[in-house]
Amino acid sequence: MMRIGFDAKRAFNNTSGLGNYSRFVISELRNYFPSENYFLYTPRLSPQFQNFYTPSNQVQIKQPQGLAKFTKGLWRTAGIKSNLRQDGIELYHGLSNELPFTKTSGTKYVVTIHDLIFIRYPELYKPIDRLIYKQKFRYACEKADKIIAISEQTKQDILTNYKTPAEKIQVIYQDCHAGFHEVRSDAEKTLIKQKYNLPEEFIICVGTLEDRKNQLMLLKAWHQAGAHQNIPIVFIGRRTEYTKKLEAYLVANQLTHAVFFLPYIPTRELPVIYQLATIFVYPSLFEGFGIPILEALNSGVPVITSTGSCFAEAGGPDTLYADPNKPEELAQHLQTVLQNTALRQHIIARGREYAKQFRAEKTIPQIHQLYTSLLKG
Image 1 (cartoon, rainbow, N blue to C red):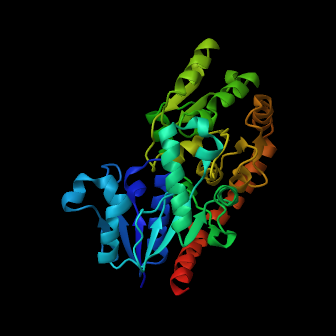
Image 2: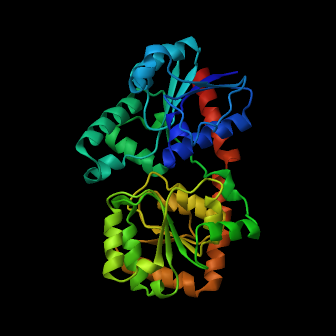
Image 3: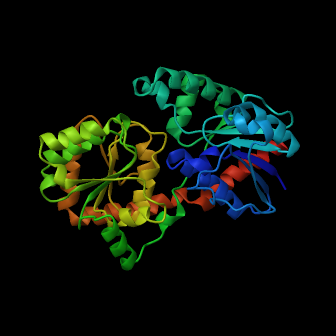
């Protein structure tokens, strides 16, 4: 039995992509390989996710003790070394782009790198954040015994920016939450539709409202296509200052009545909203992978997303792609999907089939094999 440690901070505290990935890996490894010993290291437990995992003989949740309680950030990056040694950790997996700055002798280190967007789009980040990310990511790639890249795009970015040996990097895809694989009942759909006051038909766009996610381009394309007359948009994601740009556009064009902004939606309810949607649009400029695309494919919703980056990896050959800087291309795709029922059904069927390659039964054994090979090697 392996003794495997995880940086579980995001798993217990984060609602977005890094949190979802962390919960996916930890949960599915436990499901498929229950005989291993798992240690989940986290500086805190948020009320929202404190019951994400129930401790057992095979799973232990580890938090800072004594004086380390007052320096939780330092504990996670340096003080954790003593915990790993005391717990006899054979392999430690940094699930969200970073590793502790002190390496424990005898412990193999794995890190998952999700994206290097802060290098590609530095203007989207504060200078201090870029400096911190630069140091953390470079250190993690140098010190890790093995790197998991969540897409070929991310692997190429690591090779380009850090000159990491290619054999040190393995691309292992991730899946969305298993709840998106389930077809929800009409009764559930009716309840959720009423709870959130959703329209009969709508375009759904999921992701933090920020410049990189490019939601303003969707509004322009939707307006340009004339789709605003028949089908509203539902945005689901955390608001940032960028939201003001969206609101200003809606006010200027008298469209506020046709757009809905929803906050964080609980995991059990979000797949239902996807399944109620008519089209899913993901106009992002750049991603490490794009889990919302997989969520939509599994939910039976036709997907329109961006060209370039990793989007074709996530979306497959039957998803529709538009230049994220050309609203006229997205507008054309919107019109096509809304008007061509046969094409819409083709995209849905092919998308569901394509999404099966990302299921846990295929990806999680790859992670476990990486662990095993590393310890044997």
